[in-house]
Length: 254
Image 1: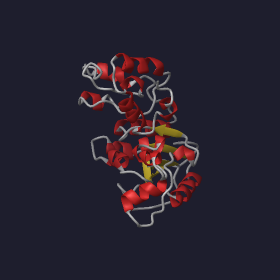
Image 2: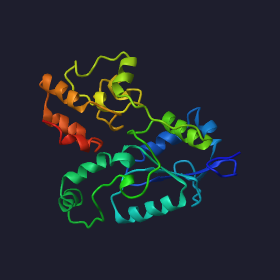
Image 3: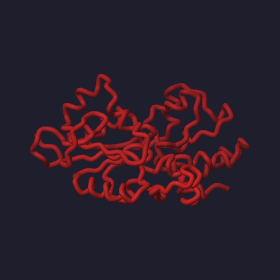
């Protein structure tokens, strides 16, 4: 059986965490009915939520978390060197995530606020692709277990890989939800990539855009929607900056 040009029967996979809560790895390690069949495709070489074994030979490296220290930079470069394919998964890895809020303040000020006079090795937050080449990204906070399994299975079998191109609003309508704009909430669903099955908005919580921009979004019309409803541009800017997914659009606000 051939996988990625290798002759061995199972894909060797390593999962690694950097600055994060490890929620995405826990999603993948969740012992639901799909996990045993999924693991049949894989030879786990490094994944501490699943196994205590640690090996440096792997075909695919799954990387969770953002980069915030110099030692993380060197460790990530080593992982990239060892892997044939590197997949960034989770919003922190793909965009910087909540950790990026630190970048809004001077580093010295942030360290003093959190650690007082203790010396801390810390850098401005960077996403994985700022440091090494990323072959594929799977966004989400946390990621969808089903989506990660589907994508890794596609990689392993040589099938086509694709994320949804349309916005969360499509999935929200499929769930027959009342639009949160109609309930007086600023929601980033109209501009955020789908694939989460509208889990937040179905729970009446406004989308904060953890999956990043959908393809070909009409940001001008979205801004007009917010303006027409006389909603707070300051609140909108906070939501756009929460996960660091919409930095390219934040300067477009009027």
